[in-house]
Length: 444
Image (cartoon, helix red, strand yellow):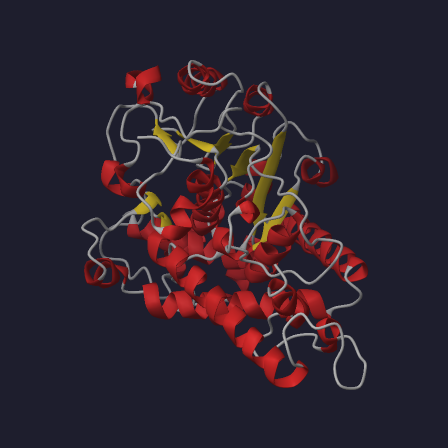
């Protein structure tokens, strides 16, 4: 199977059958083909050979820095209206490592990163076990690189988004074939504890007769007493001796309580599209169990005492996110750009939730025999999500076009009846989509 360059870039969005270099299963050899995009790649790393690597018609090889989803004709998912970020190249494809911090919406974020990889020609390394040694990562990486480089001279871009604690040795290994982007996520520690308890309880850590979604105060006290202190910092710090140096290792830190904000800022700064970040949540448990407000103060205080560094980490991550938003606002002439982009993303998310929540039925209704995720519970129903984004963006563009014709005459006109600039006359339409860009899209 040979895919053209344009097909490689937008094959997921259009629901085509050509998926190039999405993912390689590593480890035990157990195939999870049902969970792969259109069963594109179902071999294990130990079985991988040059003949298994699909030629996607890119002369410079997978991971060429010139690959950009924005180049796909008619597919401009973001409709940005800020000159500082308009038409800038994406930071992807790039090597990246999402250090997956448990119970920080990490499975959902891992799915988002797998979406980025699928859309931007990055190969995901999928370890068969939770913790990998430096040698295991190196061996897996070399098998993938050897297979790809037998057909292409440029090393592939690699991604990792499994539960592997930050380790400078693994970082250095991933950096050997090019620069590495490093990401992670954090959550308010007390809230995270109660979410973590549900997972541990459902795995029968406290016996089968415990009401996991009830108060279970004794079991929670037991877990709070014995669990690792400052466990979030322990996951992400590596050899860093303090919070400042730990945080400085990362290019971007997502904040779970500001999940949508984090995703939109990430999209803007890294040159991505709505199609890359729209998602179905992997787990939805919030509100289904008692939080801190309904638990004994003594228990909350114990959790807080054991998480003092994690609290500081969470506060620092919030401050860093605020700084990034302030930087965007400064470059884009105020808060309207960020606010309108966030509102547009929220609308897309609502639509995806409504259309794709029952994704098994959606797949069946559209003639697809396989209900898949990108990997395990990471990246639910991507075919449905991409369909919704493409459809909604086209609708918004049509709505913007019609509005421009009604108010300002022919789309792309340089002035309105009073002599003003039509393209700058409307900051955003009724759906918070930047009007300037919707008008501009008519000129191309």
